[in-house]
Figure 1 (cartoon, rainbow, N blue to C red):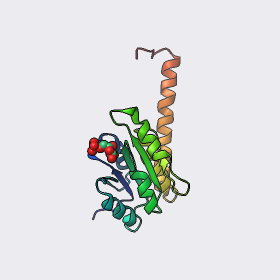
Figure 2: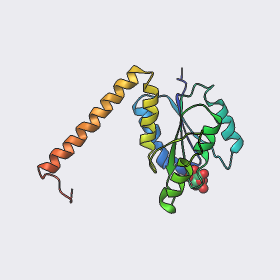
Figure 3: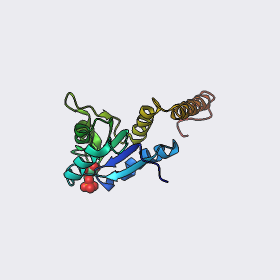
Figure 4: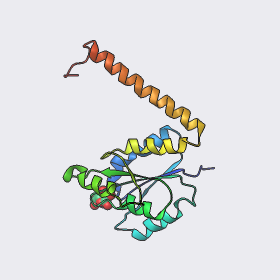
Length: 170
Ligand code: RP5
């Protein structure tokens, strides 16, 4: 039996996958059932609207939406669902992702998209997991363990730099 996805990772093009795969990888690490889809606000607008309208009814709890350039996918999904939408601005080969960032973050009042950093797919997944963890004690415990791990890694860096084991040359 397959578990119904709780998070959807959607993107405007398969060219976004190199960035968005990290979100899927983090969800897998945390054992969160998810689906990964390519749905374009501009090329398949009817599919996008159908996906957004059906998302909550299908049992999804959070949508992570990544897009680049004229990045309308996260905002348009947010306009047709009550689910939280986390937007990932994907950097294209021009403009360094600033175009994507501004397209996603500058939403009008009433239609929120929680926008992470340019190419910030990892944090998008971690935010989705935190949202799920508010009603899932197991996920909360896994998140606490993850936070301890990154704290330990930072303290290791501190010790290495303080002891002079690591300099600017690595
Ligand atoms: C956006 O256009 C996609 O999210 C992608 O970041 C960008 C370019 O898409 P391709 O032309 O590479 O398919 O809608």
